[in-house]
Length: 109
Image 1 (tube, rainbow, N blue to C red):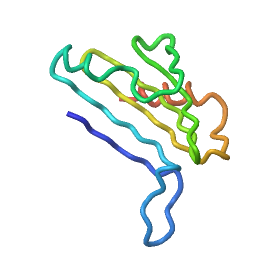
Image 2 (image 1 turned 180 degrees about the horizontal axis):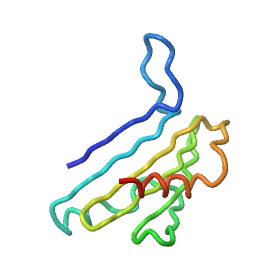
Image 3 (image 1 turned 45 degrees about the vertical axis):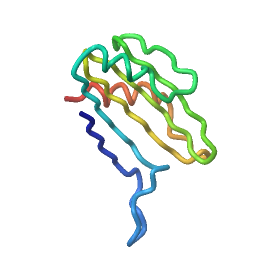
Image 4 (image 1 turned 180 degrees about the vertical axis):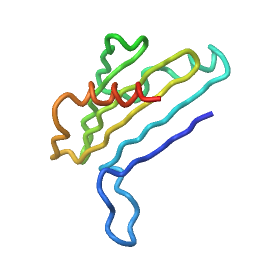
């Protein structure tokens, strides 16, 4: 099962959909067993993932794409995987210590 929520970081112009380059995506994947978890290939779709201390099995990466920079935190907790992706225009600066802010969001109930 996978559940995905997308939160726009800025209001879209009237009559237009939200811009995926200005959004926070949170997805949760729950798998039935270890074999299914292994098949996910964690960490997924990350450029140079690094372990995150104090969060169990967690990885952080900054993905530099052509028009967007993605700040990604992926956390495995048992058979549940939560992925937070902050997508910002490549020229934007999202502020200091994005990794810590994503980790704080991940800890919310």
